[in-house]
Length: 256
Image (cartoon, rainbow, N blue to C red):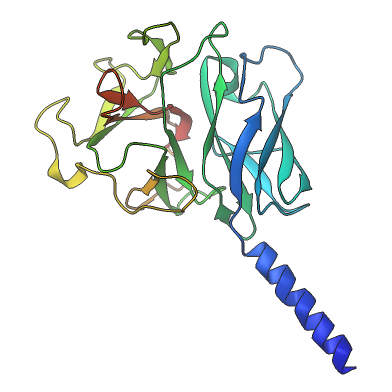
């Protein structure tokens, strides 16, 4: 009886350890796809660690995707053509969630423009994954250059490829400053006026899998939602960029 109790306790502890582990999202195969124009979904394979069979769930731009966990280090998921970002050049922001609500690092699944590369770098997402209206959430920025000023912008339009492609081709996807639906949310660079010293650098580093991962202060979502959706994007100074600055991949649609 004692051995049975010890064995049962060990199983419970092992199960609790697995459930409480935040997953790590690694490489994607393929790492990018053309815009989805066919009725059927596209299947992506992802590596990583800490995946839980029957429990881990991939989220794409905040939406849960059909997910099959192969092992603790591999899974597959499907991107449907109904996902708005999947049909135009740009990228989809991916996370993996383990119960109860532990999110992985983010990865960008690139949606190619005529097979060319893109110069955006960094992702925007909201945590916790699968939040409900009225819940307090935080905007997460990942793979951005640490300790640099940034500006956060929004637009009710759809982000599209814009000018200023780097040498050798490719494109940059962005929202459109100056348009009638453009909104400057916070400006630590001084693009639209004097910089706001309260947002000069990213704050609150999160996770350990990638450098340059930051959470912005929490805010409460509207309940019920306003029905307005926007595209969000950040621009940050990047000394390694040939332009001296970098745009994250836009996130859309985000419901206000």
